[in-house]
Length: 306
Ligand code: MN
Ligand code: MN
Image (cartoon, rainbow, N blue to C red; front, side, top):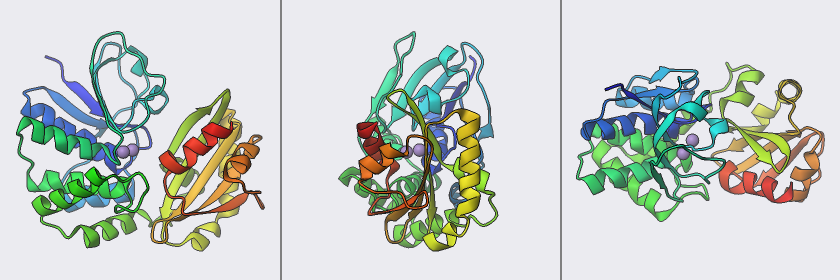
């Protein structure tokens, strides 16, 4: 039996990486031969979580061959998935995003729930199957939920996420508030990244009607400090727009302490952003009070106004 590959989206975040490791553990408990893999570099926040709970990063892959059996976690859109996904055999999806442009040749297990994090769903699956979650794995699942919900402050957070955090913190034996702040802060140390790396670190491609856009996001505890590099960001974004023929690029610099974002917006369709947020860009930028979630507060606004 060939091993099934389990992975999350490109530009992996903490939920994507942890989901692939946790899902592998789950599948192994079911007796399946599986391997977690990743589609990009591990960010500092994820590195912190992996180190803290004693896990290695999954192996990096760039593409899958035809007929490869795969399980997708934390995504379903092919544009965010591995190269070659169109010809892979997708056996299962566990996700908490909208379903978009998704089709398969064969039947599959598909589980999607509108909760704040894939690991909240995975926790339910463990319980439904009567599987035990050990201390280390609980720590990993906890880290993912803290990351996706910005320590339960994001509007994407549901009651189920909150309950899961409390339950997992108990098993992992950590104080989730202090651990969570430490983990999120580890992810905001961005000084040694180039501007090109920062706009790619957590970036999602999306189609707005017939227009091509990217929405990238970084977390910080200090927006003014990040904005000192605005000219660098603009240069990197302009190059990406040119190289990939994009109509719009939104780069959200999100203050995870005060829950606001500063957006740098470029491209020939910036009026989509201006109309959606009812803001006039000044020098390619706008402040978005209370905006922290790309999924709930940025992408739908752009989609509605395209
Ligand atoms: Mn994710
Ligand atoms: Mn997620």
